[in-house]
Length: 353
Ligand SMILES: NC(=O)c1ccc[n+]([C@@H]2O[C@H](COP(=O)([O-])OP(=O)(O)OC[C@H]3O[C@@H](n4cnc5c(N)ncnc54)[C@H](O)[C@@H]3O)[C@@H](O)[C@H]2O)c1
Image (cartoon, rainbow, N blue to C red; front, side, top):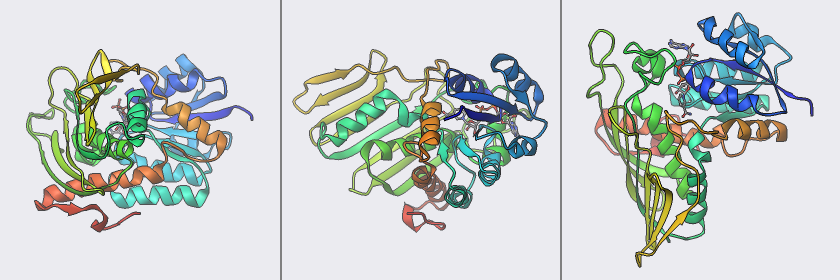
């Protein structure tokens, strides 16, 4: 097969530290070009990795020589750009969260089915080595039947991470971000818990709040900076997910899964990223990678997985149609908080299988 010609819509931080370098290290890729709202970042990437700078999103998407696009713009553009790219015959790797509404997320998956083009979502947590191993251990019965779990994703917030840092960052604006910590971090762990256990989350309740983050005017931001969710899995297992943009210290990206035969500890201990403790208290440690954090970027595997899907002509581990249900759970959490009720995920309007 000829080289896959890739183009990047959005040259912000995640494209700079992850997608573009991860594409550039592959021999089967040609970097065709970039579009970014402020052209400076696109020019910087072109200088570093080659390829041209397009004048508009439309110009890039109309280029018939491009096989696939990577969408890493702010959240409010994901749906529109994905559907336009698919309808122009491109394969798409889109950043998380897929979209701002469940209806938009469904429309993206439908567009992928209609056009027969790949739509993958950059859920890098699925590909972390400790998560892959934990999934295998759970499947093989290492902790018996899953009874409970807790997962956390917290750091000091996106205003220092963004390539345009500051209190006026788009992550803090409802019109560009949709949701706050819940969509930014919660989508990762909502998806991860289902991925690890092989079960769907069937019921949710949640508490969200804007506790500390203030915008450039000194006003509390319009999206959540903390969320705590209670989840029930299809089997009846119950547990929690906590996400925060106000952990002003070390990042917490840990997960514990409790089963009838023991406990799995994932990314809790720097020296032991994956630990299995059986109910007789014997422990086993697994040699896997360290957690990828905002400050410490390792190869995520997202680009490799997407490009292999493009070559094979079929989505796999990052398939949007599978990740869609995780979006439904996130919106169910939002609804649960809005109404103060426990929500059955499959009763949410716009239900997906
Ligand atoms: N998979 C992950 O772990 C992960 C990590 C970080 C970011 N992301 C996602 O990647 C996407 C980009 O995030 P980032 O970290 O690169 O952010 P960033 O602030 O560094 O870049 C934002 C990008 O969006 C574009 N943009 C379009 N409209 C904008 C607007 N109204 N305001 C500001 N920027 C606008 C910018 O030009 C830029 O390309 C987001 O959807 C984010 O959720 C995913």
